[in-house]
View 1 (cartoon, rainbow, N blue to C red):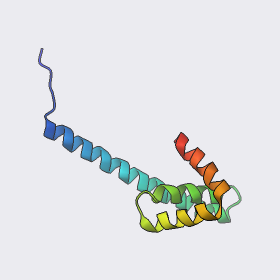
View 2 (view 1 turned 120 degrees about the vertical axis):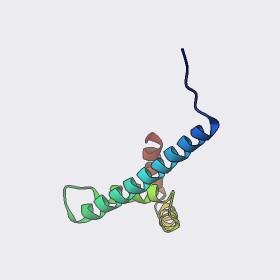
View 3 (view 1 turned 60 degrees about the vertical axis):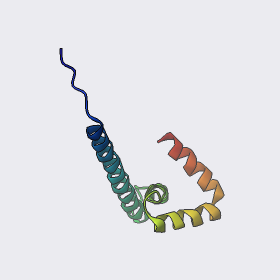
View 4 (view 1 turned 45 degrees about the vertical axis):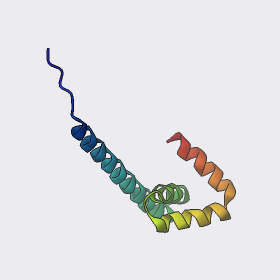
Length: 91
């Protein structure tokens, strides 16, 4: 019986593809949450602020402008920061 093994290059290429897909999913998810949060500010059925905070936190992993906003919000609202970090550790 022949067992197929991937070469080192194939494994490296697969790893790079998986990393790119995760990055793309995080960016898309962050923007989606940001849009839902914006809509939630005007619609009574969506909680706008939590969606905005989680979306900004996710986008802060990739974008410098989001990182600055999150840093400012963390300094201004430390209690909300602790709650948000608790939520994100469960993800």
